[in-house]
Picture 1 (spheres, one colour):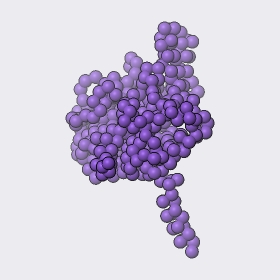
Picture 2 (tube, helix red, strand yellow):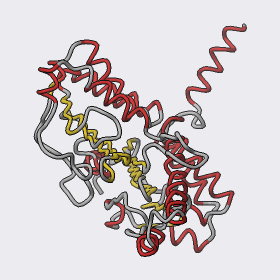
Picture 3 (cartoon, one colour):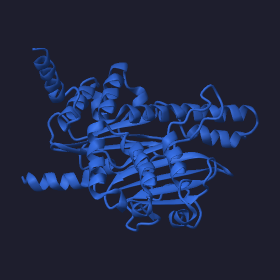
Picture 4 (cartoon, helix red, strand yellow):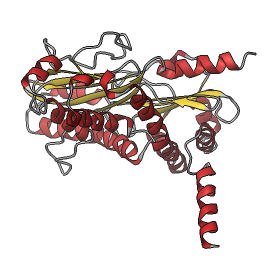
Amino acid sequence: MKNSLILSLLVLLASSPVFSQSAKTLSKVTDEFVSTLSAEEKTQVQLVFEDSARTEWTNLPIGLASRSGLRFGDLSEESKIKFHRILSTLLSSQGYLKTFAIMQVDDILHEIFEIQFQQGKVNAGSMEFIRKLNWDYGNYFVAIAGNPATDAIWGLKFEGHHISFNLTVAGDEFTMTPLFFGSDPAVVEVTQYAGLRPLSKEEDYGFWLINTLNEEQKAKATLSGKVPGDIITSPDRPQWLTEFQGIKGSDLTPDQKKILHYLIEEYVGNLEHEKAEKYLAIIHERGMDEVYFAWIGSYEPMKAHYYIIHSPDFMIEYDNVGFLDNANHIHTIWRENGNDFGEDILKKHRGDHKH
């Protein structure tokens, strides 16, 4: 009797939309968020699905690039609670906590420069420009393309300084690429938050892998030239690279492949487990032998460095540059080949549901 009750409970939990990450659940939690908004806010948050704003992205602060939608800081407490539910449905606890650490770092960055200004390290002209960048925990924007309650095809964008989430739903399928995370500073060095590192493992596992390679392997992995000033697939550049560079997974030892897998998992693991497992299954099906890893720059922290992980199915970029010789500003991106803003799933859905 006891065993049958446990089995029934497990079946119930497995099928419950409260715990699953289905497109249906995403529609439900997004519609619940919309229901908390005023009529004016609903008008502001809504985009038609074909609006170009859905497929444009940037990691720049609000002071340099305005956004469509509703400002997160202006939401009511009820709306914020419901929006947190959307993010905790989309993201693992790891990805969810990184998101709000990155948002918090915007307040810290503002505080750091105010301190430097008071100490005379930043002049008045520079400080005026910095203040106009509008770094702020609340300066992130929510926009919804289409109607999650009634439409089979819809999307959600959450974006601001160092964050760009791009959810696309098509029937029972959904994607989250491109997915951008950044952090400036990468490690907070002053204030009560000294030591905070929102993207710690993206950095640490990269150094772990490159410094595990022997000299011959390092020579294969390391590309010549200056560290890029940003990720190569930044918003104003081509969004996918066709050339594979660096060292191929088949040239790594089993232990090195394991570290590369840890590094990939750090990015994929930002997504809720069901979605992350689907991505990992694609990686495992092709095999780690087909994954390339390339590095540019220093093999030591706090000096400019960059890496890219690239396979026919996905791409990860990481860039850490800064001022002078102090690299302390990370940009990262996760991409699924052919599926930025749901390109592949939209094509498939429209092919299967001709109107």
